[in-house]
Image: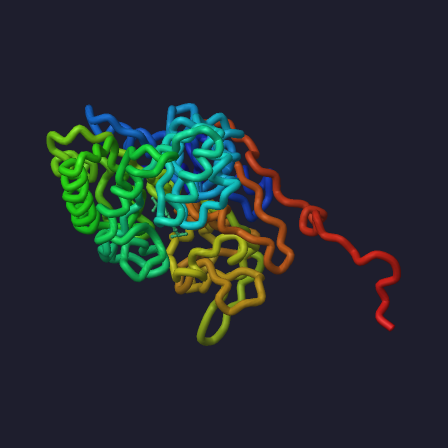
Length: 421
Ligand code: LLP
């Protein structure tokens, strides 16, 4: 459930008209709903019931400081994958003691920053990383809390680019190596073992792959107990899907109930790392219609947002709903490919969409709050869109539209006479 609804033919975010926002701030424009973000976070936080748990929002889904700050105020934890994300969490007022650090390529500098900040846990993805973390911790006179991210070799049945729990993927430690690797970790001077972690993929719409993975991890946890290694938490990663079209992913409560059943009497804290499930349907991308190219075999609606603003359709063939912000009763209903101005055939936001629109109208691309702005770029020298957070009748520009000058900030002309001879 989200807080984007039509009132008298105009799309609103909470009590704020999106037509007004597009008018005041221009397009393309990302708009987020605070009430929706909070609602989705509470759905996760309440799902675990009386079991100890921590919701670690996956910062990569949307790392705007205002988004992180809304979640920090609720007491959220955070799942980070870089030093940059750690810096954002701290800047937004997040509690480092609730941060888990995932990612296959943690640098020495990132590990040491995370140790200095006092994060909750490193999700370790390889044996060399384990040794590196131990060495750095010893040199800083610290002990690093760790989980091993186990790759359970399970098909998440999602898009191959966002499937991460198969043997052929680069993520995690192979299940067969897990026990030996934990025994090795237990010997390392800079390491304290905290948890077991996995993340098998994103946009999962069924529970079965999650259950299969958790059952494997619980068997591992029981085997570890037998060799004297006590696991305190189970981190099930992110990956719970959302409704883009007509998918029916399980609710967080149903998901957590099944997890609780599987965990049974075991004294384990549950960690979740949801990104998309919190943010996707808490945001829209507003875009203005520039031209309609009506042809014999195909019609194109050329809009002012492009693949540089929202790359999911181009990159994954992802389907996201596209709706008019204000119903246009004068316009003819036609089938359009909704495309941007970038010079690539793959630059589209949606294909074969039934729309009654005219130039000057504003469209909303729904479900754009996760993996939207964060994956945007300046391709074709296009300044990135502004971002707005709605809170009831109020709104705040939480990131300014980029300026022309910002496009070449940090660039440098060659010194002296640059004419070639
Ligand atoms: N934890 C880890 C270790 C992850 O790698 C991810 C996502 C998450 C949590 C959060 O997963 P979520 O709850 O959002 O599914 N750009 C792609 C999605 C990439 C997901 C990468 N990892 C997309 O737009 O569909």
